[in-house]
Image 1: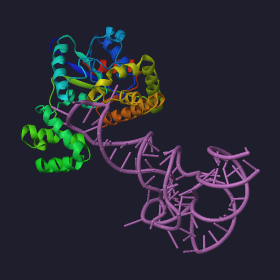
Image 2: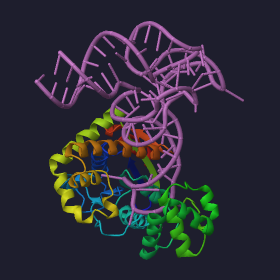
Image 3: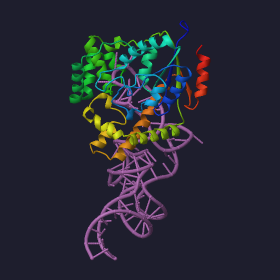
Image 4: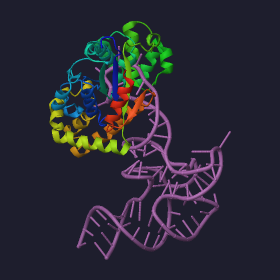
Length: 303
RNA sequence: GGGGGGAUACCAGAGCGGUCAAAUGGGGCAGACUGUAAAUCUGUUGGCUAAGCCUUCGGAGGUUCGAAUCCUCCUCCCCCCA
């Protein structure tokens, strides 16, 4: 056992497809634990709107990275990569197979192939750059980047403020061009990675999404969001299910409209997730009902 | 009963004689994405045997070289006065 190969089994897929249930069943079958790769389930203040596993589910299988952060914390993919690798090191002492479940593609990739190291930018720099963007617009950011890193500007999506902001941030904090430091090399890991994709026919997925949104409302999403109102400016709350309720609480729209908007935005999110995961052919796809098939697949592939 | 306004692509809504397969927004579909990523951004959206052709702007006629745009009638919707 000590020297046998270790496997990280990634279970990814669009939101509401049924990842949680599948993961729990698999983790029980293989007597293992689950670590979440869901960038919103990290925050303990957000519960209903992020469709976290409930207490009963958490009792069935040990979960990691569920509610381990506060919405006030600074956190990013790199932190996640490091924490996950550390945790995996421990988990692999006991288990040959560990499950990573989630829908945040970038976070999953960071664990599977790594992400370049950059120093964290100073908070003042970040807010300064955001101010520039707010006051002078995207063109100003493009001009600034043209000075600091024309090579990157030539390849980025120049209309995407987040990309430009990040590049400027890195240029400033490191004093070097972002494009020169962005190696984008795959790191080697000392464990094998098996990627399982979960999906359903579009109409089925969409009706699951709608059902789940209705359930969230019944469980008290509005109250949850109401309590978070003072912190609405925080990044963690720039999230489907929360921002629409903020609009309702602002009386900009009716509750009914807010619910409709959440459903629409969740569908779009699911589509973006699928676009991300289907980008590579590394995933083996199953429907969430095929737990037995997945179990067999893993049994065959994890020697 | 009288007066007025309106019907435009999946939805909303511009256009009011040629440059209109028809602005814009929403939605849909597709895509990008190495840093708070459930975020952010992009393309596309009548049909086809696709640099061309065909069928669209409530319906039926008409005027005109040419109509979503003008005229007539019809159908339906909204508002105001009685």
